[in-house]
Length: 533
Image 1 (cartoon, rainbow, N blue to C red):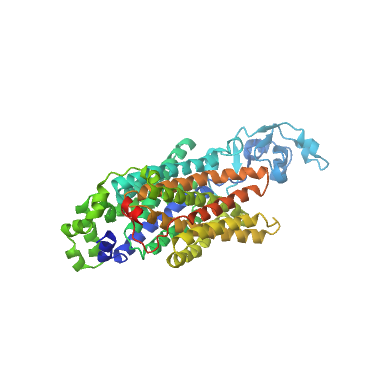
Image 2: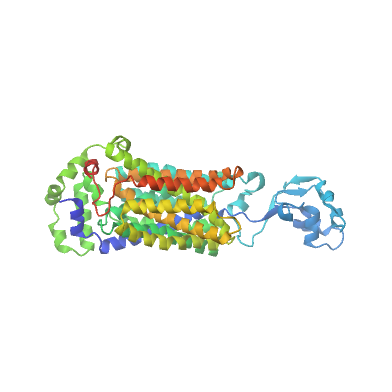
């Protein structure tokens, strides 16, 4: 008897699994909001220099004659891009000659200007405050804003490496519980950050926890469901991210002040921390690592929740030890992380699955930036990203069950690459077609994420599963960090970034064809299980 057979006896898709999915997927929705938070908390409102004539009532009263705001703006701020007030410069002194209808460009271009010495005035019609208005991340300091997002991605990168290994050593549920608490504390503290540096540090700690939550959620769902129900469980997990995009837009539309928005998306994790103590540890991991007594206890708990009283009574220590004697003896052997690259059966799986994770992260950010052309309403755009994702992921569930993991993974990545490459051939004037291709490509990327979430867990043994998934998450974050940098190639040729964005998933999709098929196969528990497949 294997663990898969033990799981079938206590219920591989019953009341327990339904409750577990709800308890795990709801936090995933809130995790997604933290990844998208900078779109709103870091929004850049239109701005101009603070000038006495406009923003100091005493000085304004000394202006000659009854002049309106437009006239005072004309004599105080030089024209900037698109003939609008310059966002980063002001005149040394009011240029009254510019009120003359016969004034020419020479009159103002030769006038002395200076940077915004006294701060900025921001348009607060859309957002009451953002981190940009809080710490004046504009003009000479505008590079600090993207730095916050880069630090967040670096936190996920480090968190994926640390939490993956920690979960294989200390358990999935224990690490997940700690990650819930860490995210709640760091996220709440970020709302009260006194400086931008402290804010970035807290965002790093928050992102560290985000990586652990994403990985342990997927692994717990995978290890507690039967092979037949596994694609359904992982699709629901993936849909949590899709609904999270819509949730982000809803919360941000309601809360326009960035500290309150930060609190709104962080506070729910205190509740997740509290109920996570109820969650069952992975019995598969407990048994394979020699914690047989606790593993038996968790199996009996699940059988009880699934109302399988007879099966619960039949579960005994002697029965479990006898049924899983081979797996237990193999699982006791010390396994090193280097086995992922040194073991012949695992080396190819590690390299190819990591490439697929990298292609997903790299391509998602490439498409998201191209999708900005769909409109300037960031709330609607945020909802659109989630809505497009939903049918793609539901369709992927059918493909995973009928076509298998390998063709679904390869096909979704190849389709995403072809959509981006096709956009290099479409003129910019055909905006509707370019947007349609971008949306189709984004749907394919969403499908690729669902596939790799299922596939990567099935490719690796229980003793190294979280470590392998952690490497994949690290690769995805590396892709996310490198993705925006590719846009710099647009200076050489406008179509060059799209060529790179399209080629990477195309090659990764073709490489995925070299992976073994895992549909309808039991999860491997040991390295020997992988080598015998």
